Image (cartoon, rainbow, N blue to C red; front, side, top):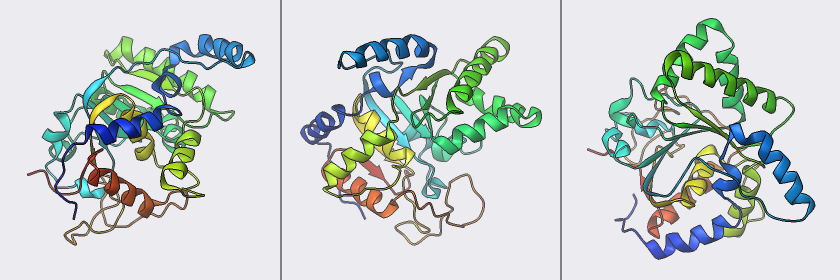
Length: 284
């Protein structure tokens, strides 16, 4: 069980200073419609060994919620608490419709990993599945859809196509979603940061989307609460859990790219220091 929590602004400020040297929304959360201009400016600045910072759709927020997809959110009644935050980050197109009581309805920022952006693009190019995705996009109206990882040969094509579809959805369905990207793969500086902070030679092959969202939000949020980041088959009371709150069944998927045990210990440590509040109990 986690100990009683008290916000520690000084500890958050110290960690924010460390993180902000490597993670910056003006580098890792950029308007996609600025992409061509940003690339030209990036190449110019890089040739002169100058740093770059571009326009970002985020500002400064008093309270932020990072909402993971863990089964611990099922029957948590945390929806109202999540929606009370000024800025809400979610991961990998996790649905809210049908789960509002537990996860809320508000989404400010939807962060995608590589698998999720490919799945999303496949769904949007299938006539039947696109209808369902448009329905989900309506729940994301006014939010930022953000891909922040490596850009291989297919990703620029997908981002351009996705941006074109979002323009069409704005005209047809009045769905206003801002597409955002990272100028460089954000997983690399997050990985280095975690190795440095934890004094480990190796964190994981890939940081989870949740940890990446947390580090990014720490640069512009004054109070951070983390929900749904609990990758275990049972909750602290021994209750069996689904892997995701929206899944049926209790099968636990293993992903060898992530070190979940180390991650949850790190989150618990941040909680104990008053940097973040980690919620692993029902919100009733």
